[in-house]
Image (cartoon, rainbow, N blue to C red; front, side, top):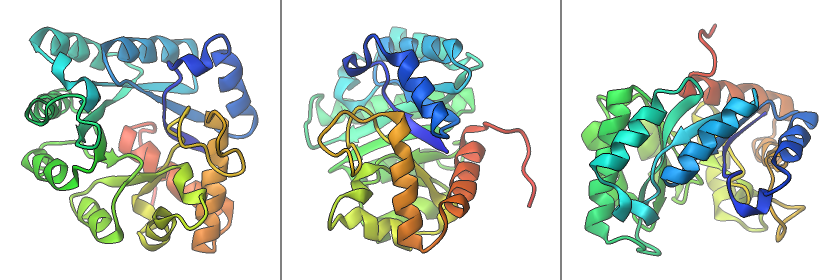
Length: 258
């Protein structure tokens, strides 16, 4: 199993990161992708990845911090992106819910980091909240040059998900699909399994049966189990396809058979 999106740099993991990673390995999570949200966390992600074979890093600036994006910062992100343990540019995108950076600046920072992803030949990890149409429109500007990507913690409906998939992108689901009466569970049940990857977004969005507590990469197994239940498949069948999707997207293996 793979936790395709978490934030082990957050304070909830201070003093116990190695134990958290070891716990994940013990329960069958063989790969953890730690996602940068600003320059500091991006640097941290790379350092963490070099300390643990099972950890890989994504580097980028979240839309909340879009106002910090300038040429100097992009130069530093570009340098980080050249590291052997960096597999994506992210988390980047738009967030019109909190609007912690002005929307025009968010869009500018998003485009700048998409250009960087094209330059570095890396896939992207996209955050979109109450901004789906603008996010998709901007991504379309770069689709022909991008090396794919994923809309993480997918927030939309099945029709929107299919629009993303039609562009050649993946959608990712986390603990929300385990919540009672979650609309996302219906979406996850309807999409092609070959276009889905799974995540925790730890320390947030903790799945049932630990909802309300801190989330950990080890808990991605509950998301796999729920997706298997929704699809009337075994966990092993879901794991085989979803892990393959993630490995292919992020270049975690060199070749694939049929």
